[in-house]
Image (cartoon, rainbow, N blue to C red):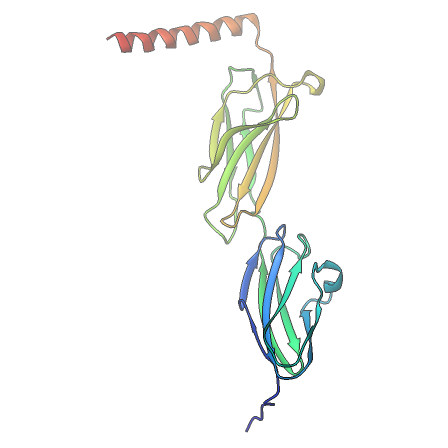
Length: 231
């Protein structure tokens, strides 16, 4: 026989399982109904997390007698929890308790970013950017390819999609950095947690011969397209 205190508070929470990105604010909520005065208190299973320091709301809440569905919220600041870790948050009041399990998402990992070739000519060499072997539980993964301009602006080569590769011509690199250009890969999981990887390539100036060849190629393509239209 189990005896239950009739005066014990009744606690319920908004969820028993919650997944959050570490860079997002975590918002947990519970309600307490009690015939007697009690002190609501949030607790976390991991004693390396100082709940008092990372919480944006009080972790101890006075609950008055005869309270009905009294709201008790817990809000944690972003980056308070370790990625790819599970925690149990428990709301206590008197002899009663209710728990919420929180899984902290982590970014995709283990993959590599490859750009080929490593050296080329401005607006002539076609560079292939490829994301290989990235892994995450929360699929599908999506990929965005970019490069940084000489002034540091992010220039998108291929917008976020499930495609794992992209091709692009690149402008001349910054002469102050040996004509290097930084290519950037962003990998996102289904919850938008992301990883960033970079690869540097050298993009040299086109010679006069290169420019002439490129101009002739463009003119040839334009004439061919014009012929197709006229035909």
